[in-house]
Structure formats: structure tokens, C-alpha cells
Length: 158
Image 1 (tube, one colour):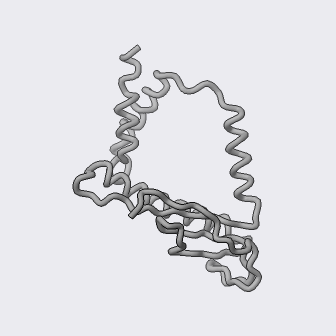
Image 2: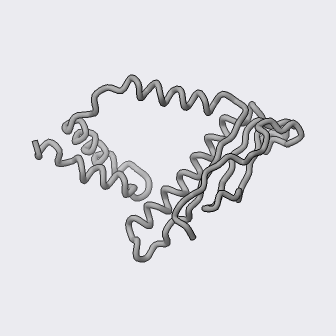
Image 3: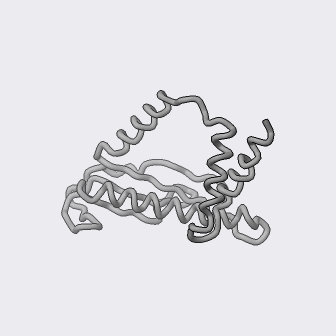
């Protein structure tokens, strides 16, 4: 199995007047959440009307991101014993403004970027994360452990 994911649109029309919304049963959909395998073939397709699209797009994005994060975390912790995560992709296609709005917001944030956080700011954030760890559910994600390891000594290195 290749270690890359093929990302491309489905090629289907964004508006599907005869399709049924998976959430409310209305006829006419304007959004699709598609889960793909490593070749780009759809393994799950979910269609939604305009009213149900934002919530369900967010739900599937969160679900699929979390599945990927958990699998990657397990593999990074024990690459000799845990299976390498499957190369899966996702596409969120819609005839709404949501994707364009997300892109414009991201670009606007990038354009207004302030200077990066200082080493002491990062060390403080790492300390706050460590202090809050006992209140959190489940094991600390590997990426957070690495962030703490990288930044908790930042003040001492200066």
C-alpha cells in the first residue's frame, strides 16, 4: 500500500436536487463529506442539505481527524508494534460559502500575523499544559508531549 493519499474532488455536481439529506431527510443536497482510501476512491459518502451541511461537515471532519490522530499517535509511540496508519483522505465539497469563508479567514489571519511567541511564552504554555494534565481524559497525545519536551526548557536555554 502506498504511503501517499490522493486528494481530488468527486467530479459530481455540487447541487444534487434528487439526493436525500442524510441528517433530516430533505430532498436536495448541497454538501458532501467523502472519505477516501489511498488511491482516492470513495469509501464513504455523506450528503446534506444547506441547513444540515455546516454541522455535519464539522462532525465528519472532527471524527475523521480524530481517527487519524489516534492511529498516528499509537504508531509514533510504538512503530515496531503498532500498525502504520492507513492512508486515508477526506473531501468536503459544497455549493455553500463555507469553504471559501474558511480560506479567506485563514489568509486574513496569515496577513495579520504578529511576531511569533517568545521562548518564555512557549515555556509558560507548556507549563500550563503540564499543570492541567491531571484534569484531562485519556493519555496525553504524542504531539503535546513533544511540544512540552521542546518548550519547557526554553527559559533555561536563554
